[in-house]
Image (cartoon, rainbow, N blue to C red; front, top):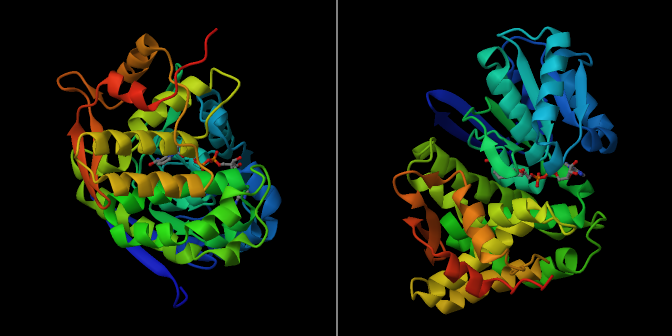
Length: 380
Ligand SMILES: NC(=O)c1ccc[n+]([C@@H]2O[C@H](COP(=O)([O-])OP(=O)(O)OC[C@H]3O[C@@H](n4cnc5c(N)ncnc54)[C@H](O)[C@@H]3O)[C@@H](O)[C@H]2O)c1
């Protein structure tokens, strides 16, 4: 690895998991593939946009191109249907118990392929190469895999750490502005949970964030984005926060729950919006969820009001939404009770900020409090 690379080590359920961040980190793939050749499952858009890079990665591992399945990225494809297509393809490849699956893509592809890897022949070696900002700072780290089903976000999944996570911010240059905004939501969340100095840096960069992400066309890449902001430093700092949390609490019985900041409400709004003609992305939903819990915490005098305002201003500077039409009250309660964080004994657990960098888990929030900070639903 080059000098400017970052290496973070985890031990998750007695399984080592290494996060490498650096230019062409993917070329280290061979270190994490005990029995080559691996098979590749790749986001089809990434395969179109980065063919030379993917060829280099594959050649670095086995000196030749190996079978690759191209899959669509995006929330609707985190599904049982796509999972079954993957199983059928793995069967055609005759992937044995000692084989390796390399997943290359954003959080949806990593969640889906991670679930396939954890269940194929009761678990084969898994390596991930995250290609979105959100996947680099969050989805690739900590071994949670999932698909959506029955109108619920992520109810089916496993804890199954990747042996290696190879992150290279060079992939970010082709992301659309809206995908970068989604990643910023998780980056801001991670800073708010565990790195107040990083949050302060992001807040100080809000004018530049607004010029680059807040004001560009959502569906287009942002010209010059790679050089405009210190991605390598930000991704590394956020990854270190998540690595620390999952190392301490892989199964999410305590401190790891902090990573759900903004997610309890976010998941509900995200799933509900997908039944409408205004689907929210994961990052947008998390941004709304964070803005609402910061407002609730400020109203309870738990979190200083200026810090709640900083959170809201930073999200807005990145072009992220901070409120949304509320689902009808009875539906909101029903959707919340379907959340996977509901425990039969203690009900739904919420994450609330005490201040930037200090988070409380296992808090209670009433639906009426949420409704105060969401927009009144439109009639009809
Ligand atoms: N497992 C976890 O711990 C965890 C944590 C956070 C989020 N997630 C999950 O992550 C998912 C969201 O991930 P995401 O935001 O990466 O979305 P995504 O995977 O849908 O990717 C967004 C879009 O970017 C495209 N894309 C990927 N890489 C690209 C690149 N380099 N250049 C251009 N386009 C590219 C994809 O094809 C897709 O259209 C959600 O399903 C969420 O639940 C999981």
